[in-house]
Length: 389
Image 1 (cartoon, one colour):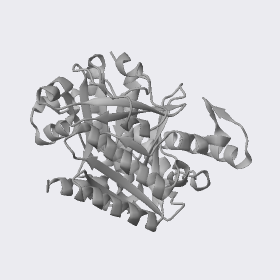
Image 2 (cartoon, one colour; image 1 turned 60 degrees about the vertical axis):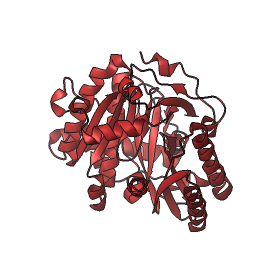
Image 3 (cartoon, one colour; image 1 turned 90 degrees about the horizontal axis):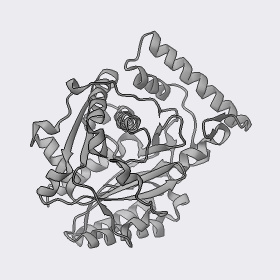
């Protein structure tokens, strides 16, 4: 049952995950679900990175709506999401993902690949998989994943080791539920000049050395960039409601196509809701929607922002100066020379945000990525380095 994860005590600090208490081993009767967009680099080069990002958000809310809550293990990676699934939810989630594959193709013309691998098979192959929890805010508990099982599962899925691992569109039994997916904010400009999307993969064979290495990276970022509030990619002063393109993407995601009466009705509803929020924020009117006080909506986005995470790689979106980034790159290059890591990074002048809210609940997460490629482009750099190992 999924109570295994719900009953784990979350850490109050992200950095605490890398020292002190050991992470918990994932039960061998669970499953790993990995989704990603095939040809995401080409889509990004065509200026469609928000579509790629949106596809990841849709898988997250589709799975959340099967779980019935958001306290389950998942990590967003830009062009895809990694989930852990208990056996009792395997088939309804498989159906939801099958329909999501179809919806992503219909709505955005993107090919989504998804595969589900038994944890037991990964253990039999000698891989390890552990997890921890971090309370990012009162509304969001984040999962962190450790071990080499995820990279092995990804390899098996991409190489087609077992056709039964792949999720196919024709496995749909019930339609996916995307209720709670929203996409109503403009790209957020950098406060300090650059937005860095960073992926750091520790490669030392010793697990404790890897954790200490990530602690070194986090300590350096703090010493170079300042405290979390200094390098956080979201600022109240820079967050603005979108006035068109992203609202249409939400309507497309909800309806499945960019035309027809249902699409325009959905778009009209989104516009009306956006107008109410804009009025509340501009005039400080404490309208309420669920647990939200709409005049403080920007603050909620920052509180539950998913701008740093760990899934065997440290993924962060960092706001800083060119000098900060050059110092960071120099430090990471030294760690590469020491044989401790490989890394990839991508620089933009703004970040973007995709939101997943659990309806009738205070649970939420706001996925943050660098614009123009973000994590997907950083991952491309990292993969090229890993080929040389």
